[in-house]
Image: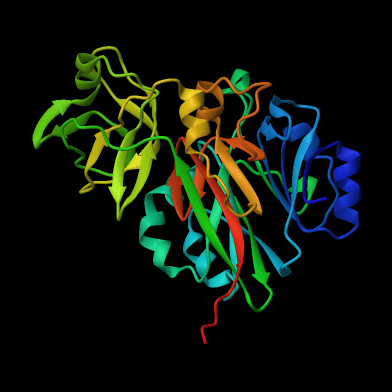
Length: 332
C-alpha cells in the first residue's frame, strides 16, 4: 500500500510499523497520530482513485517508495530556510510542507528562486491549508513526526536518500500559457501589488484588471526558461487598491495574463500527462479542484491532496506537481 485514504487508527498502525509517510488531513486527525517517521499538513481536499473528495474524517497517506533507503525529518523557521539544501541527501529528494499565510511561507516563496540551484536533488511539496469555510478563521498547521508537533509557523521537510542507481525528478503540469496581451512588470517582489507596469507604463493594477473585465480564474504567467510559472489572483478590488496574490510576483520578471480556457475541467484533463511514469506522489492546486468542480468527479489517474500552493523548488499556483523515480543512466 503506497497511497490511500485512511482512518486515524489505520494511519497510526502504519506509523508504528515504521513506514516513512506523508500525511494530509484535518488538524483534529493529525493531532492524534503517534510519533514516527512522518510529516503532515492540514488540508481536507483530495484527489482519490474514485474522484475528488472533501473529508474531515479521513487522512490521505503517501508512503515513500521502496527505493528510499533513509529519511531525515527537519523543521525550519523563516530564519533558517537556507539550511534546507545543506541538509538534503546527495542522492535523493526533499518534501516540504509550508503553512499558508505564515511568515515562513512568505520567506520561502520570496527567496526560493535564489536557493534553487543549491539543491542536490528535487525539492517538492505543498502549502498546508484549511477547509474553505474556515479560511481566515483557522490557521493551517504543519506536523513533524508527532501529533503534538503542530505549528502554524514552521516548514517541515522530509529529506529522503535514494538507493544507488535511482534518481528523482520533479515535474509540473499547468493548464496555462501566456496570452497575447501586453507585458506586465512589477517594481517590487511580493504577494500584494497596487501598481503594474503595462508595457512600461505605470497603472493602478486593480483598475487595469477591472478595465479588462479580467476573469481572475486566469493567473499571471511568467515564462522562466521555457517553463510556465503561474501566480494566481486571490483578490482584486473592483476599482482601485491592493491586489492580493497567492504567490509573489518578482521584480524584473515579465508576466502576461494567461490565455483564456474553454471548459476548465476539460482543459485540466487534457493537460494531464499521458503514459508518464507512475508518480511517487503528487500535489494538485485547490483552485484547479474548485474551478474544475472536481468534487465527486475523477480526472485522470492523479491521486493526492489538493493544496493551497504547490512547490517544485519554488511556489506555484494552479499547478499539478509530482515526483517520479528513474533508473540512473550511467552511460557506456
